Image (cartoon, rainbow, N blue to C red; front, side, top):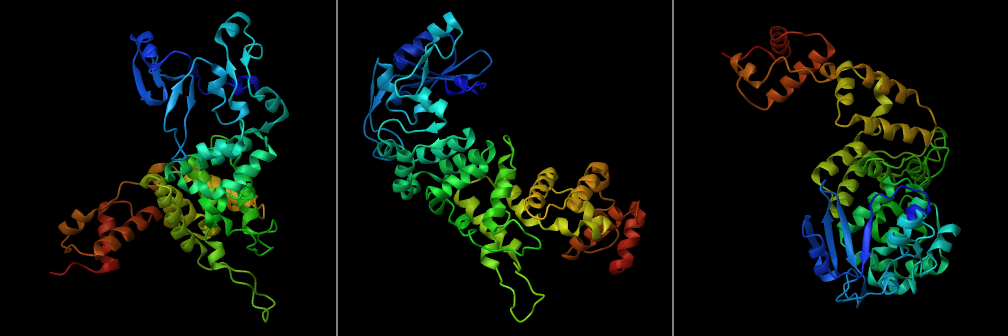
Length: 429
């Protein structure tokens, strides 16, 4: 209902009804149905294309002793009673399908018992009823408040914001997976900067990402970072994340400089040419990122890509001076387009110089995949056949042969084997 009134295309539709789950199952006996939350009155009904619609029975919730789900529910026939248990006024409006079918007017078909229409017009996110009670029922609603406000560009009602600040420490009872998913949505729905500013202002950030709070006040050398400290720099990157950005790019942008607070070194006052330095911040940042991502239970595949973004974000500084083989290895990093996107945002959020980005982008787009990742001219079996005994040297020998292949100095298997013999000696008889 919210999206319709905003003139947006809803991503999906949920149905609320006075029909009990048993009745819903009977009504859709000819469809595939899944009772994902029968205890809570929720049934998924699939259409012939497999698209599922959530059908929930009007209900009144009991106590939420775990801060996530009600201990018990009571079914109701009153839509207002159902709405009063929901999270925010803008999410508490219902669409009467009978009226909508007759008029085609979403506004005329709106059932609004909580002032959602007025808050939507005023761009205000407000909890339904007592904010402290709503957040006590489900602690994740505090993060959802930030996400909705950031994505829609709404202000959070003062009483709602005050309740979040009061209960912020309780966000830790929420599972890491649910926290991860909400943070990922904040990063990828187009409101990453205001979202993280709200997380900080509402005191949620120290409890979910304490490592990010440490970015505050960490000064940077003005000749490279005229924008300010690491927190400001990171916010500027988040501001450039478009709606629909991948989760890995979003987290890479957030974490790319997470190692700077631990490696900050002030300039030597006795050396007028010295400056602020962050020696080893990439290596430290990789370790911190790994801890954060493991804590939030990201998949191994996601961790690998996000950590790669952190690990390689400074390598663009060397692209003009890389050997051809080194550059090609760099360009063939998995999902290199994300490395390019991160570097572009990094530049635009600091000195603004895009020359290295443009060079790397041109090389990436102009170099065919077979040139940067060709079929190896020789393998370990070829080395064995040539008389070399298997051992730790094989890795170095094959890497050196591939470098020569990438440089174009060898083009055949015979040339590659001859190159190895010259570099590493002939095999022992």
